[in-house]
Length: 434
Image (cartoon, rainbow, N blue to C red):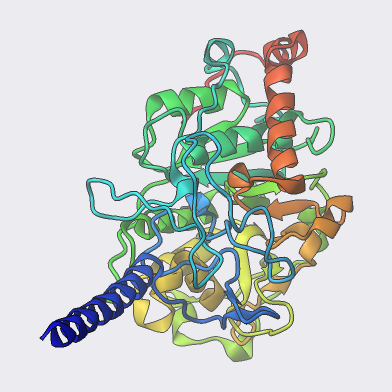
């Protein structure tokens, strides 16, 4: 009798263990979904590593971003001990465990709206010098002159629904402002930096961005309602980026996701992609407006997501150069609602790659990795990358952590200096927030 009892108990324990394992695997799938359009990159030890900006079915965070684009807190395919792979959020002090089946951070929070939150989305315990920046919120944007207006402009997009001044994407964009406008290592003396914002970004956040020297402009929202399951609410906000093509005040815009950090001056990037003409014989019905086809000179250039496996949809749009155009804008707005023609789980990145497919009338131009290095290796700390495309604020060690922390220290020291005050006073009063 005792033996039968023991056998029964052992069987129940075994069944319970199987259930828990199955539930754990199910939870992992729910948390990260599946990737489409791009194959997983197998590592030498069999662990699958995914491109840094591919969007999973239920990823909640890209800032901006999470430039398209964006799961950038992953391990390098060449170095599974990458500081990003296991990175906790330093500011919260909460440990981030690594998933058993992959290189992602597994500590998730479940906010009120039911969507999962990753550590890199959690507030950072970093303070901005608000008392220094606020007095300059009504000053002109740095490097921005209306007569004559600059031909080129840098840009990013802030679409965080977190109103906190400690929101990581908001703070990352402050790091971008410093790196692009003020840093002796990577700053430009020629071009303004536009921080495009979603309509729900708070007036306080906008004021501090303006105070730091950015040109703040709101992008009107675009309704996007794909019929496929697994699309996160946040991805819907990112289609407002298409309205950047309306900014015809500028001949070219160099766009960086909030997690694409310049390590050197990028002015050359405006010039390296040639102006191309459309390919008339490849025009499709999707290229026609009511008054005829869109067929004009253009630039659309970025770093291939996977340079070893060219595919029609391969550009990572977290670091790209494009030419604003009203007709191209009309073409994009006409087509983005055709969600059956591109992978909605890759959101605006998949859409733009469809619109600028190498097989279409407007093929994109691939750029060298130096202009958008995701999965940066330890060897690349030697200056081979001009842009590192990772959420380096969650790096727990190595040169990426050093890059974030040293950049933040340099920014804070500069804002506290007389040089910053003098430069902003030289910019002069004139509202840069629109």
